[in-house]
Length: 368
Image: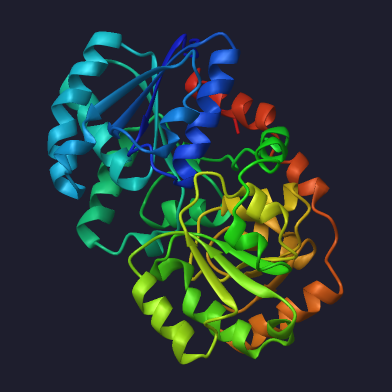
C-alpha cells in the first residue's frame, strides 16, 4: 500500500567528489523542497561535498575521517552507528547508492528492525563488481529492497542477470541541474588551465575504468595535438603510471594533470571538447554535464550509459573501447563537425522530473 514518506534517510559512502554522492545530495534538496524531512548519513565524514549538503537537510557523519578506516573497516565501524541512527530517526523510506553501501544498508535495516521502504540505487556496470561473493550478496540482499534503481538500461540488464525480478528494477536516469552548472561554471578559475588554451578535457578518477592510457595514445595520434592541449581533471591510483606514459609519448608540454578539483565546471565549460575513454560506466554524469554546458563530446561505446545518453551517436561520437586510432579520428572529426546539440537529452534528465520519480518509489508507488 502506498504511503507518503514524510521522513527520508539518504545514505552515502562519503562526502568525496563522486558522481553518486553528488546525485543524492541534489535529490536531498529536491525532496526537502517537496516538503519532506530529509536526513543524509555519510558513512565517512568530512570531504569536499560537505558544503554541498543543503542547509535544511540534517547531516549525520557516522565515522570521523581521522579514524582513517577503509573498505571493510569502515563498514564495521559504520554498521552499528547506522543501525542506531535508523532506530532514532525512524525513517519511512531509505535511499542509498553505490554497491558496497547498498549492501551495508540492507543488512543494517535487518539489524535495526525498523520498517522502512528501502530503495537501492545501482550506478555502475557489474564489470565494476568482480567478486563472486559480492555478486551473491547483491542477489540475496537486493531482493529485500522495495525497489532497485538502475541508472541506465544496461545496468538494469546487469541486475536482471544476477536474478533480480524485472518488476523490482526501475530505470531512473541521473538528474542535471543546468542552472547550477552554469552558475558554477562562472567561478573556479584554474590559472594553470587558462595558460593551456585552447584545450580539450577529460574528467574522471585516474582508475582502470576510465582508461586514460588509451586517451593519451589517441591524443598523441590526433591532428589536434598540434593545436589543442589536453587537460585531465581527477585524482587516483594511476597518476604515476600516467605521468610515465606522458613522458614516454613525448607529451610533457602538451598534457596537464590538474588533480581533483572541487569545482571543475569552469574548466569543462571552456573546453573545446570533452572526451570520455572509459572501459565501463553506469550512466556517466560528466557526459550530461558537458552537453548541458554546450561542450561537444566523444566517448567510448562502453557498458553502460553512453550509447543511451548520446542516442546511438546522434549527440556525440561513439568509438570502440580501447581503440586509440578510432578515438583519435573521432576527436578530430568532432572538433571539425560537432554533433547535434544535446538539448533533448538534458530535457529528459531535468531535476524536477527525476526527483518526482524517486519520490514515487519512496512513497511506495512502484509503477514505472
